[in-house]
Image (spheres, rainbow, N blue to C red):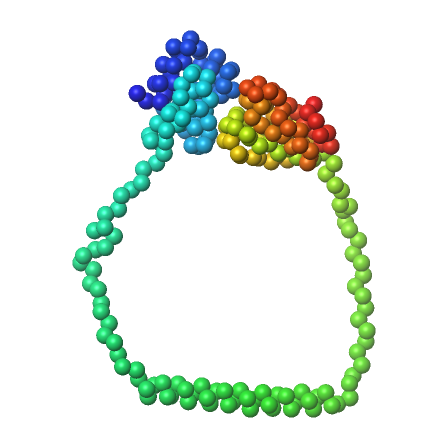
Length: 247
């Protein structure tokens, strides 16, 4: 049975509609419908597809690891086997080069040419040194002192960004998270594996929704705030500049 069929059957057996499952897992209804058809193109990649499968399996009392293994076996990519006969063509001639005796006449001619070039360089270098010495012996011509370059005023004053918010989140276990800026633009959405961490920067506010608040640790503007809630609790938090606590 395919992954989509397993999920659809488990959802119907649990008496849940697609909308109800979407509300519980925070996964869009269109994504759930596509996954139940074994269409993972709307998930945004393998990482997010595995995260959605884990969330749905957990809510439907299925084994998340078994479901992800089945996904990897079916959609993890196939390696092309390459035959040795294709790598090494039998009809390609192999040229064997005979060992030749060194050409001593050629070697002597090259050595003689190098010696002649070295001698010419030494003679020319000696003449150049004598010319420089004679030039230094002449009267030195005083030079006018260099004038300092005028200071160029700044065209625009440099101002610090006072309304910048920096939030770092770390997952102590697998958990779903949604991050938006003050205008509602999604900065991040998906499952974070245990040990993963992400840092976000935005102006004025950063809004976060944690699927499992006890599985995350939050650092706002350099201050560790710990977990935003209890284990298994879904919470929403808003963080602002210079405010080391959720609002």
